[in-house]
Image (cartoon, rainbow, N blue to C red; front, side, top):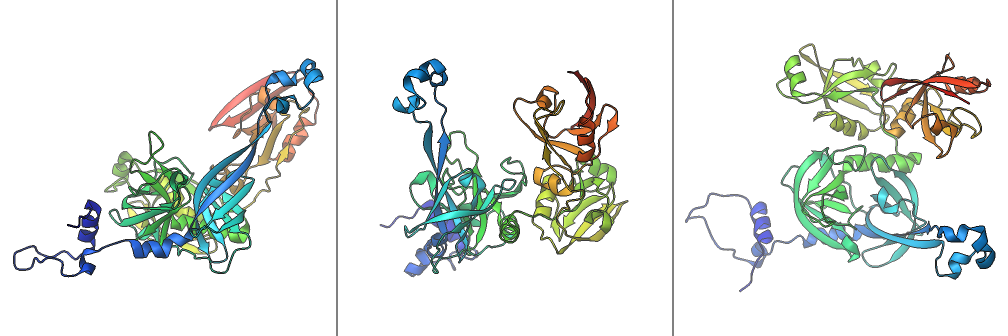
Length: 471
C-alpha cells in the first residue's frame, strides 16, 4: 500500500476546491493525476536560478608577542613565527546562496555572505563554476549584487514577483545550500508578513516562513507557488544554529529597488520624504480620535524636502503610501525605501479629524550642504584623529539617522586627542572656545588658533554636553 505524508495531504486539501462533504458527492481519486500532487514542476523551473556562493578571505593572524620582542628576533629573525608553524596569514572560507535575476549573470545575495571576501566563486545547480565580482553592496538592507565573470548565454534568471501580494498561509519554497550539503528545497507557508522586530537590517519588514532555513541558505530564494521570487532568505531565529521553523526573508520590493539602483548608480539610492515621526500608540490614537493605533505621527519636517513641498505638517498622522497601510514607524521606513526615485507617491494622512491625500515627488536625498568630509591631523588638539563632515540628507540616509544641521563626528582613531577629549561617533560639535560651529570650515578655523585651554560643547542623542580640557 502506498503511503502519503501529512504534508502531501495538506497540500492536496489546499489545492482542491472546497466542496460540501456528504455521501452523495464524496468519491475516491480516480486517476494517478488526482493523487500525485507535487512541487516538482515549480522546483524544476526555479531551482536552476539559485546558485551556491563560496568565498575566500585572507585573514591576518597576529603572532605571539614573544616573536615581537627584539631579543628573540635576534635569534629567530623576522619570520620566526612561520618557522615554528604559526603563519601570520590564514585562509577563511564561507558559503551561502544567491539568485540569478538577470540572464547576463547578475546575482543577488546577502551582503553578509560576501562581506570582506577576496575571492567569490558561484556554482550553478548543474555544477558549473564561475568567478564573480561585486557590483555593489548595501549593508543597511543586507543585500549585495554580483556579476558572474564570462557568464554563458544560457543562464536561467528567476522572475521577481510581488511580495506585497503574499498572504499569511500562502505556500512558499525555500531554495539554498544549507550547511553546505548541496542545493536543497524545503516547503512551508508564509507565517507572517511585515515582521519589524527582527534586527538584521535597518529596514525591518520581513516575510516570516516556517520553511526550513539553515546556515548556508542566506542569500537563497523564497519562491511563491507560481514560481516567482518573493524574497531573499536572510536570517533565522534559533537557539542552537539550526532551524526551528522561524525564518525571515527580505521582500522583493526592497530587492528590486536596491538591485536597480546599484546597477544604475553603483550604490543603493532610496527615495527621501524629509518627514519622520513616531508610531501611533493606543493613547495617541484615542487622543486624536482614531479607531486603532496605526500610522506614524509626524514630529519633524525637513525644510524644502518633498514632504514639506507636498504640505505634510508636524502633527499629521501618515496612514498609507500608494494604498499600502502604514503600520508603524519601521513600516513607514520600509515603504519609503521601496519607492522609486523620479516617480510620485500618494500619501494618505489624518489631520484635524479629517483624511487627506497629498502627492509627493520622489527624489534622492540631496548633498546640501556638501559634506566636506575631512580627517583632522593626529597632532591637532583637541580633536586630532577625528573624521568629521557637514551633515546633510544624503549622509544621514547613509548613516541611517535623521538629518540635522551642523558638523558631525563620523569616526575616531583608537589613540587620539579626540578620543581623550571624550568625543564619540554621532556627536555634533556645537561650539569651540565660544565660537559657533556650523560647518567644517568653521571647525578648521577654530582649531587653527593655538590655545592652552579648550572649552567646547557637543550634542549627543539630543543632549548638550559642555567640556573643558587643558594641555
